[in-house]
Amino acid sequence: MSAQPWIAAQAEQLLAQRGHAWLLQGPSGLGQFTLAMDIVRAWLCERATPQGACGSCESCHQIDVHSHTDLCMLMPETVMMELGWPLAEKAQSEIDDKKRKPSKEIRVEAMRDAIEFAQRTSGRGRGKAVLVYPAERMNHVTANALLKTLEEPAGDTRFVLATDAAHLLLPTIRSRCIAHTMAWPSDEEATAWLAAQEVPRADIPALLQAAGGRPEDALGFARAGGDPKMWASLPKAIARGDGGAISGWHPAQAIDALTKICHDLLAVKAGAQPRFFSPGDLPVPPTFQALNAWARELMRAARTAEHPLNAGLMHESLVSQARQALNSKS
Image 1 (cartoon, rainbow, N blue to C red):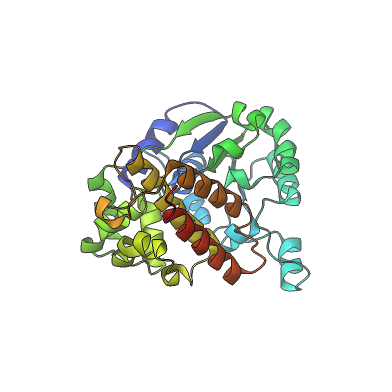
Image 2 (cartoon, rainbow, N blue to C red):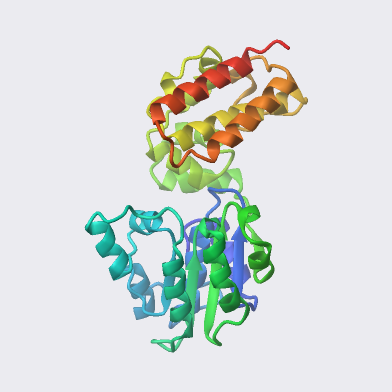
């Protein structure tokens, strides 16, 4: 079972219920993929208990080495490669031969392979499992290809879809799944887990604040070289037009950080507490009009963050927009 206690508790809860399709939803960083893996491990385990998979049988070993014959991982090729799962032979050959780049979406060809997989007989006699992650990376064609199989699966096939953007899924996909909203860990659970990942205890409170309390996002920030002191100084640096702190970041990371600044300034302006920064880290909030206009610009930029025409120019534009918004007087 998962080393994260809040994940282990949810897995036990879900495994006690019946259902052929689960939708694990909630903000990023709460462990959707980890919980999905715990569920499919238990479904396929030869010696599963109410608490989950045994971790030592042949089925568990096959999952550990990413070669289980009754598990289909339906993910974008970029995510498959990042997590070490093998691609389909044809897809791997096309990428190796430089015919195309790895897809950031779940391709319809992969979905067709998953549908064919669902119709086959179980190889180990424990049924079959299909894990879809991140489920919002299905486009309309891919999602529609899944619908019929999701509604009328083969008798021994079960599905887990995991997402941090459930609102982007087709309503017909959501309606065919049992929804589970991810639980938030306590501060003590998150701190203990991050410390076990060798994150310095002195940095954990600031990292959790930067991640909005989401431990996996906090770990990702720490492993990417995130500096808690730099994070605290970021809002006022951006207000001065100093974009040096985010100059080496991917545009999506920069937009995420600026969105958090905008969120907290809107909260302070409305009389609420900020979430991602301490009150003293923030500049004086501008007008609601300026903040709302900035928020709309950030949402627009997020749509092209994965494919910016020029990352450097995008950074300059983001910092310029932020400085203008934060120094607006009317």
